[in-house]
Amino acid sequence: MKNFQKVMAVTIIALLFSCSAKKTASDNIQLITDSSFEGTIVVVDNAPFSKLALQVNDSTSYYIECSESLTDSLLNEQGELYKIFFSEKIETQLGTKIVVSKIEKIK
Image 1: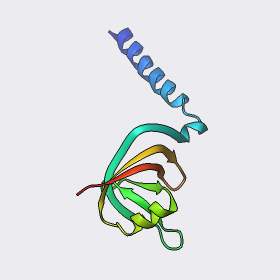
Image 2 (image 1 turned 90 degrees about the vertical axis):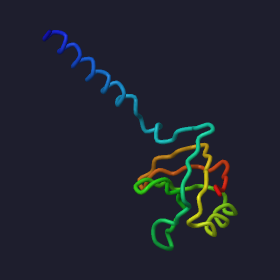
Image 3 (image 1 turned 90 degrees about the horizontal axis):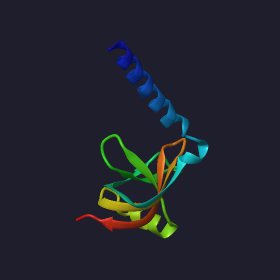
Image 4 (image 1 turned 180 degrees about the horizontal axis):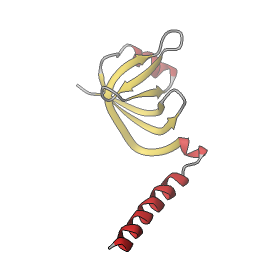
């Protein structure tokens, strides 16, 4: 029985290390197809560094990267519910940023 426990412990540790060892700097950008989040359009940070974000729950929000015209449009939609489709998810020092490919307003 002790050998089984040792084998299981070693296997679990090996799996954890193999998963974490595959992470590289290039993994900070993930290409995604047909992924989306639903949430509220908000503005985060202070002027002049304020940015658009999608708040999906009380503790999670994603910075939004999109065209200037879409940014201007979404600034007028603060507090509204949207489904944001994105093509990339990028980890930055400030948080996670999503690159918008399409938006849908939720009524």
